[in-house]
Every structure is written in C-alpha cells, then in structure tokens.
Length: 392
Image: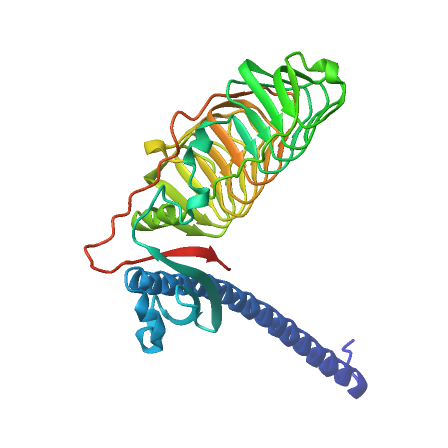
C-alpha cells in the first residue's frame, strides 16, 4: 500500500533539511575562522621575531657609524628610516651629556614592531687592561683566588672542595652539612664571619673578624681580625661582543646547546639565557642573562678567554664537567649543585652556593683572562665608543 506524506510532514522535512544545511555552514565557518586565526597568529609571531632582528640590525648599523665618530650622534638626519630584511628600522639617537648616548631602534615587519635600546659611552681610544675605569683595573685579582665572591659563600651538602688558592667571601662564609674545604696551602677568608655547622670542616688556615658554631672543625690556624673587602673586577665586555659580531656569533633569545660545539672565532654572545645540556664545548660563552650547565663533558675556552660570563644573570652547574678557564658572574650569583674539575677560578659579584654530594676540584687561573683584539680602522679620531648597557 503506497503511503503519501501529508503537507505537515513535507514541511517538517524541509525545516530539518534547512537546519542541517545551516548547521554545516556554521561549523564550516567556525573551522575556517579558527584556521584563519591560527595562520594569522603564526604570521604575527614570525613578523614579531623578524621585527626584533631588524631592530637589532638598526642598532648595529648606528653603533658602527658612531664607534669612531661620536659627533654623528648630534644630527638626526644621519640616521634615517632604512629598509632592511623585508621591513624597516628607525633609529633615534639621544645625547646624554657630552660623552653618552642612547640608541632606540624600532624594527617593523608587517603589522609587528619591536624595540631595542642600548646605551653608549665615548671613551679614549687607548685601552688599559681593557677596562674603562682604572680603579677596577687590577686584573691580577683573577689569578689570586680559587673562589672570590662579592657576597656570601654557602657550602652545604657532603661534597669536598680541593684547591690551593684562597677562597674569599666579602660577606658571611657558612659551612653546613658534611662538606669540607681542603688543599695544600689553602686559606679561607671572610670579611664578615666564618660559621661552622654540622660536621662540615675546613682543613686549612682561616681568617675572619669573627667565628661562630663548631669552630673545632677548623683544623688549621684561625686568625681573628679585619679582613679587607676585595673589589670584584668589572670586565668590559664590549670587545667580546665586537668579536662575536665579526664572526657572526651574536644571538638573541634563550638558546640550548646539546651537542659537541666549537664556536667560530672563539666567542658566542647571547642576548638572553644559555643552557648547555650535553656535548663538549670549545669557546667562550657570554650571556646577558643566566647560564645553566648540565653536561658532564669537557668545556674549554681558546686563547685564554674566560669560559663562562654572565653579564647580568646567574650561573648554575648541576653536573660534573671538566672545565678550563674563568667562570665569571659579573652581576649575579653562582649556584654549583654538581661537582667536577675546574682548571681556573670562580669570580662573582653575588653569592656562591655549593650543594650536593659531588666533589669540586678547583685548580688555578695561570694568567689574567685574555680579551679578543678588535683593531679599529686607521683614523685620526680619538673617539672610542662602547656599548655600556643593553636596556631590552
């Protein structure tokens, strides 16, 4: 028997069909919108990264022009907006007094912009011990100590430190846990106090204004009296940046190294943080931020350059590498949670912490750290302009 649909049933089918078509259309539109948004987000991220690189290129170009002719800073027309790398950079130079300037570079790529700012200072062309300030020019300080801390030293855990050159803290030196400081001719100094806790020992001579805790765990002579504060040298890092720039070894952003690496030219400059998780390293690493070492392979620096330099951040060692060279935190702390062997010295502006059960053997720095030679072109100018600070 043939069935026929009533007008009401036929109307319902039409409505359902219309709803189905509408739903498919809405879903398709949503998928299209999401896909378009993802593509747009990827493009914006790419353009932002390119804008940052373009802005840094503007800084490099302006700096190279001012390096040996600082008088150019007084005329804005010397730094017009310039097309570069698929975008543009626009550098503004602001004079500060007679021998300082600030460079602001705006990089543009697509709809994205990025800003990079650096400070410059104009010094005499002559370079004495590669430091702009004579009162910080005693470079022999680097060879006089196994560990020199501008702040406190905290030694915890059960690890030993074996070394021959003095260990010095401008602040409190505190031994806790079961660790030991020992070494032929070792002298441990604090400009504030030496505190002994737990079963920690110092097997050597100590010097401090005062002592606290289990002083019987100090087996060598104890000298009580004033201990002068030692000025931690502030190395001028401009030659390292210039040399890295010459060899194409300036990077921006946090980087990870996880394989054997030989740095072209011997110096890697990173505007950001550096983590080395694996592999042997041959080269000097300078980071404006933090440096973290978790490789247990060998690390060495050529030509007598420092091995690790953190300009504004901290240095952290969590493994047991064999290292040759200076470990230098110019403005921060050193946190040594691992151990290993260091044929060199540890010099830092802040606090030194040693934790964990691994032993740390510190040799000595045979000579003051070397600096890359970046010869200026023949010129009669007495200008010598260096980058004194990266603001962002």
